[in-house]
Length: 277
Image 1 (cartoon, rainbow, N blue to C red):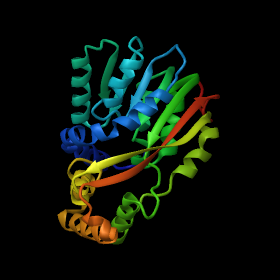
Image 2: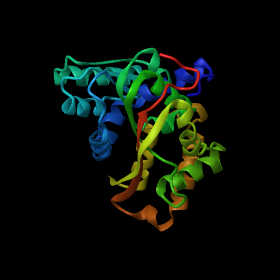
Image 3: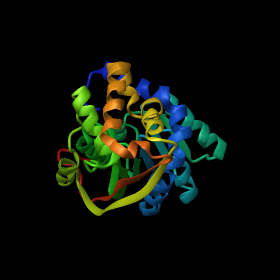
Image 4: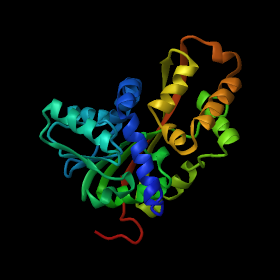
């Protein structure tokens, strides 16, 4: 969310994510794991300072980071109370004394963490209204030489299943997510960050059918907010338009969906403009 977004909007989004937390963890966490593993492999922060995980969700990446960095302090945040509850439960089950999870917006990480060695973000940047502002905030939370590693969903190709879904949402609901990646890259110098790696990571998600996938996106994922905001009539119309746009692919069983994530590794090389530690 943008820093000037109304508090009631922030609450609505947080509540939407809380309502899908259990389903998200059960359905999406296993599918995301290969991508998370690749991102954790690429995360090499310097040895001094805590590690921060904004937008931690149910804590899957926190557990992977605990395996890789068992002696490091890890501070995870999420704006959803139910996601924080899941993450805390995962930390307790792992018996980890070096990790904690607290409520907090990804864009406000620097109010919780200072002089961090690393920031690790998984599938959060694309959900924010102002990713560039988040990157500046993460840089503020980092110490000089610190590393921010972010894996996220980039703008999908128009003919991919998610590209067609975005087109269906625009056609039916009149809502469109902006192409934020070029602006975020352009903001790195202002944030005091240098891009060290930019790569695409691929895997395939399997679903019982396209309809199952759509249901999981709504009932266990990010389109729950659209359902809460616009109602079932709009969501049903989006579903119908999306299935129509898939053509003969809609009949495929099971549905094997190639997906592409984008991975950035950023190094803090200067203080953000207007900031001083």
